[in-house]
Amino acid sequence: MQTENHEAIEQATAAANEAAAEVGSGPVDAVAAGCDLFRFGVFFDGTGNSRDHAGQGDFGAWHTNVDLLERLYLDTGGVPVNGTGSAAGRKIIRLKRYMRGIGVDPDGDTTDNLLDAWPPSFLPGPRGFGHGTGPEGVEMRVTEAIGFVNADIRSAAGDIQPCDIHLDIFGFSRGAAAARHFANSARRGAVSYDSANILTKFLGLFDTVSSLGEGGHTGNFGNVDISTSGNVAERIVHLTAKDEIRKNFPLTLAMTGTRIELVGAHSDLGGGYLPSGDIYRLEIPRETYHGVSDFYRERWIVGSDGNSITREDISSAADLYPRVREIIDTETRHGLQFVSLRVMHREAVAAGVPLETEIGSSIDGLNVRLIDELQEYYTALLDNGYRASPELERRVRSKFGHFSAHNRLHPDIRPHFSSPSGHVSTQWGNVTAQMSHMPEASGRRRVAQM
Image 1 (cartoon, rainbow, N blue to C red):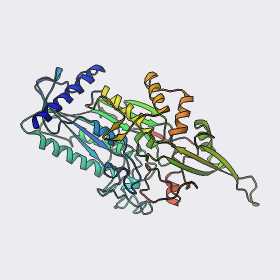
Image 2: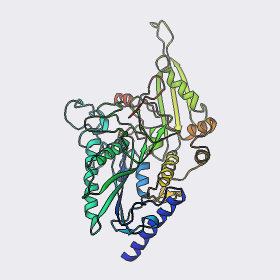
Image 3: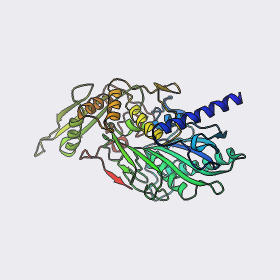
Image 4: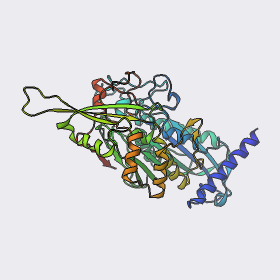
């Protein structure tokens, strides 16, 4: 049995090398022969996301793309395998680690959103879910990951003496902020083994939202360094959401690398929406939030697929001018995340990341099939340099894209009280959720870069 397993690992390694050669990047681990290598995949999930609890009970989130990609990463189970091609003559061990999302403890519990504003950011205390700090925050999650990676390398090393440790790091949302901080920490020596050279080969980011310390913050916070300058990684790919406009979800771009903009809101790119689909409602005063309703009209096909916008006169006798409330309802089908899953997978494989070379209709029994317009959209992206026509984008958005800004329960669904995550599909009627998911009044997302 052990021999059969070893042969399977050897075959997987050869397949990964051949796939990388086909896309022109050379063999996956092509470094000087005779120099043994560790290659380590580290995967940071998004705020409120946890593989071990996804889709279970009242845990209001499904599997994210970070979770799914980790399942495709070709580790060798701690067993050294022989390199092939120009990597012949060196031993290679591939390992991987999945890190649960920020603000989630091992039992799947998250910080109560109503209490999450306490204590204030200048005082110590648990603030992991809402603010990305504390014992379940970004800094501590990266510290945990560094400990795991160093321990795993030492445990697996055995008789081999690696002169190179190559890292592939993926993250979503605050997990993307964690991935960036991990890469910076590794570059500064936090990951080490004897005198081995440390290099982040690939940094794959799904829509970086840091919001550290306070909602809407876009930069570094305390010891957390999310900057991407100074050769933090050999290759950076950042997928960003075209349709995210929530005030507390500003985007922090990378300074270098490749940015690919895709249809969808934050979690349409990173994943986590439940397969059951969603109905969202946003009620806003027209005079204050006219940019939001204009944004919706421009991008969604209003009047189809459960999408509508209506107006109510809320003027009183004391008003000098008419006052209007606009009600935006959207009904959404599941599956848009599987487009960005494939885009990131394609970019990673092209860069030589040791992933299974094809994504089928399922991963570990989880349905990831592209249906209807989603397959048409993905094909158009591949054929046109990751661009699609505005008409196709509107059709995809109107069926599958979440209008993530919301502040009211839709009359057709019951409230249920699971994790109040920015990544879950549950609707909230309380004041805290209204603040958490309200849009930028202009209808334009704030964007920073570092």
